[in-house]
Image 1 (spheres, rainbow, N blue to C red):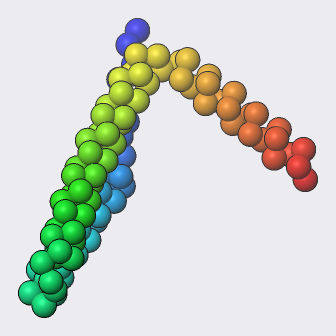
Image 2 (cartoon, rainbow, N blue to C red):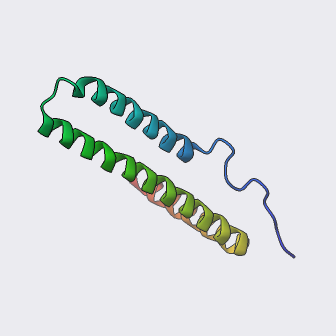
Image 3 (spheres, rainbow, N blue to C red):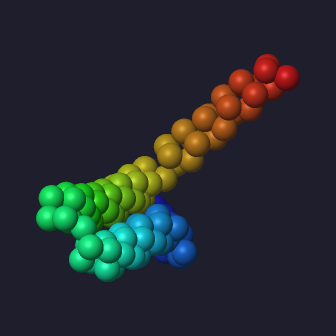
Length: 103
């Protein structure tokens, strides 16, 4: 018997929203740098441009890694649904025991 979970990944895709928000921040900083860059000397302007380029590349890598991790998790949960559920229950019980002992 095969189980199929249609909506295993959340609909609101909060990680995707976070990366998109980061890209908006980078875009805003880019526009600000262009506006302020006119008054800056050449060396700080080039440094600012290189840092913005690295930040954009990092955001892109973060987004790709997040999607790859989500896909891998989805495939793992689809392949081993009962084992995953057992592991989650065991982790929850262990966390409950640890929290209960601290009180």
